[in-house]
Every structure is written in structure tokens, then in C-alpha cells.
Amino acid sequence: MLSDPSRAGNGMTLTARLCLALSAGAVFVAALLGLLGADRAAQAQREAAEVSERRFAEQLAERAAPMLERGDLLRLSMLATAGRDLHAARVILLERTGRVVLDTDLVLGDRQLNLLAQTGSFQRVLGDGDTAVRETLVPVRFGGEVLGELRLHTEPYAQAMAFDLGLFGLVLLGGLTLVAVSGLLCHHWASRVRGVTDAMVQLASGHRTGQLPRESGRELFELGQALQELEKGVQDGLHRVVEEFVEMALQVVDGLERRNLVPPGHGTRTARYAMMLADRLDLIPADRRDVELACRLSDIGRAWIRPGLLLQAEFDAADTEVVRQHPVLGAEHLDCLPGLRRIAEVVRHQGERHDGCGLPLGLRNERIPLGSRMLAIASAFDLLTTCGDPSPLSVEDALLQMAEDRGEVYDPWMFDLFAERMRSEPAAEVEDMEPADRSVMILPPGSLPSRVPDPADREGGLDYALGAELEIMLDELPPEERA
Image 1 (cartoon, rainbow, N blue to C red):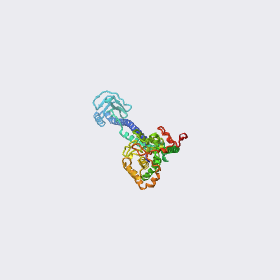
Image 2 (image 1 turned 60 degrees about the vertical axis):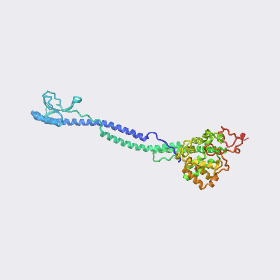
Image 3 (image 1 turned 30 degrees about the vertical axis):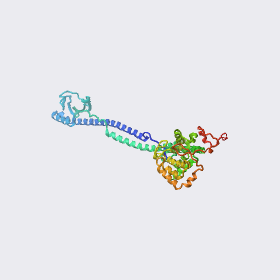
Image 4 (image 1 turned 180 degrees about the vertical axis):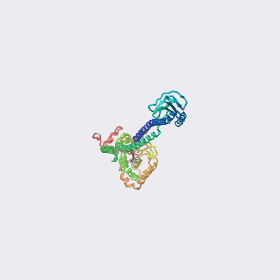
């Protein structure tokens, strides 16, 4: 196609936003579980240490029981020292009266204490902060009789780790895997929703939509069917409106030609020349139709210019600028219907120059629409061969004159194709299109000729007042004016 509607995406796509939100959620959950996991790991480590210390204290008390019964302090001292070295703990041994028999730290001496573990072993924490001590109390029994008590003092638990990196990594990996799966599913559905959205945008722009894939799911398939029904109704109505509008526009151009405001037959001949060029370019049928209709409506913008201005013999700078804006005026009115927007684009840029010095936007080279470049060449050739100053030019002379502007006004490659085609078989095709009336027209400075009306052609005393824009649409004059 000559031009396609385009839409620019704003911001992130729905899939990207969903993946970002899920990824943030996965990181948050992993971090939370990492913190909770660290606390659980510390709790498990503390419980394992308590069990290990109690078991060690019980074994130590079992070995110390016969020695305490015999009063073998030397062996008890050796046993306590070994326990201290093996477990990095302070060992205190009490006899049945509560007197301290042995203290590996040599602090208590023979102080008298109360026996607390006669009914069974237990653990407790003494002090707080840096002075906290974990104490394990175990009764010393021999032959079923309680002989004393063994107390084991160890350092406080080590500070629990602040974060469990292993659990964090595992949870994060699982979360990101779910995010990836969700992203694929979301992309799958988003592509189908995007297809429906594109179809609705094309429908709003006046273009036909494509068929939706049948495997896109029941909901989207039903939506696609509803969209197709809507498209059918809108396209039928839009097609009728476009046909009526084009018919009215062609009647406006025909009225301009009958009143000599536009060279008679100019649009038809321009369209035929453009189609010769389209054959060389091998345009697709849709583009051929657009270019042909744009050629026939290329002068419709003159209907919104005062007839008196178009008929006057001399132009000042302001009048010239007004006349040169007729492509923009025509395009603005054609652009009101979506089905004619591509045609309006061709009409709007027919005054552009290949060197970028044209109107209305100063486009250059390939930025000028293809149809506008074709229209400029075909229109100029027709005006030179029908309304040349001081007389219409022959095919060869017109091509030679246009060749002087090759590369400045006209696309050089496209002009060469057109000139080759016209020189190959110009006689029959051109002569069939030449009008019998070959009068010369007076043009605004800087534009191609535009035919001057013959006073004899004017319809019986019709007043071409400056404000009579609508008279160009009349097929016949009222009876009172014909009189």
C-alpha cells in the first residue's frame, strides 16, 4: 500500500508489566521466607545444641557417680577437666548435701548450694546480655540413690544468621520459573487480544481487518465473529458514503471544468498518464485505484478558492500563495472520510518538489508519497501538452522542457520511466486524450498553465463575482439568469 496507519506504543506492554509485578512479588516472598528461614534454622540449631549438652551432661554424671561414691576426687578432677576440654564448658559437681565438691573454674570453692535436679535433668539460662550462661543440671545417681548434682555451664548461643541465602535462592528460583510461565501464557493471550485490538483500530481507520485465528479460544473467537459482523456493517455503510462523496466530488470537478476554472478533461487525462506510469511501476490494484482517483480529484481544492481569483489575468504574491494552497484545501475535505485518507495524502503532496523546496511541507526524495510523485509528473505533462504557453507543446517538446527540472521538481528515476513510455508509443494514446479546444491559459507565477476561459464559453451573462464559490457546482443557470 502507499501508506499504512501506524500506532506508536506508549509505555510498557501488559505482559511486561505483569512479569515485572510478579518478579517483584517473587523477590519479596523469597526475602520474607529467607528471613523466616534464618530464624527457623537458628531455632533448630539451638534445640540441637540443648539436646547435645543434656546428653553429654548425663553421660558425664553417669561416669562421675561411682567416683563420687568412693570420694575419689583425683579421678573426678580428671574427668571434669576432660569434660571441660571436650565441650568447652564449666563443670560443677555437688554432693548430696549441696556442698561444691569440684569446680573447674575454681571459683565456688566448697560453697554450699541447693540441689535442684533431684527429680530430673533440666536446662536454664542465667544472666542476660554478654554475661548470659546456659546451665544444664543433671542428678548424679548411683544404685538408684541421688548422690549429688552435676552442673554444666556453656557459652550463650551464637547470634542467629540474619538471612538464609539458600532458602532465598531456592524460593526465588521457583518464583521466577512461575513468572516465566505466566509471562508466556500472558504473551499468548496478549497476542490474540492485540489482534482484536488491531482489527478494531483498522476498522476505525476505514481499513478492512484480517481473519482472527480460530484457535485463539472460544471467548476471543466469539469476539472476533462479533467484530467481523460489525466490520461488515460499517464497511458497507462507509463504502456507500465514500461512493456518494466521490461522486459528488467528481461533479464538483466537472463543474470547475465547465466554467473553465480547471482545464477541461485535465483530471481524466492526468489519470490515464499516471496509469501508464503505474504499469511501468507494476503497482498493486489498490494503489492503482487510489492514484487514479487522486488524479481525477487533484484540482478539487480550487472549489474553495474565489472564482474571480482563478480567472484574473495577473496575480500578486498573496493571490499566488492562495492558489498554490489548493492541494491542501482539497486534501482537508477528502480527509474527512477514513476511506479517502490515502487519496487525500496523495492530493496534499502533489506540489512537493524532489529537492525539498515544494509545498506544503517541503518533503524531498523518497519522503514524498509515491502517488504524489506520479501525480506531479502526469499533471505537468498534460498541462504542457494542452495549455502550453504560448501554445500547447508536442510530446517531445513537453518531455524536453520537463527534463530541465528532472531531479529538482520531478523524481528523476520515475520521470525517466515516464519519458521512455511516452516516447515508445505516444501518438495514438496522446492524440486520443487531447481536447479539441487548445486555448492557452494564464497562470499564477511559478505554476504550470491553467486555461484562460473564452468569453464565448461563459453561460449567458453569468456574473463571476468574487463571492460566488457555490456557482461552480450548478449544472445549469436559473431561468432568470439565463434571461
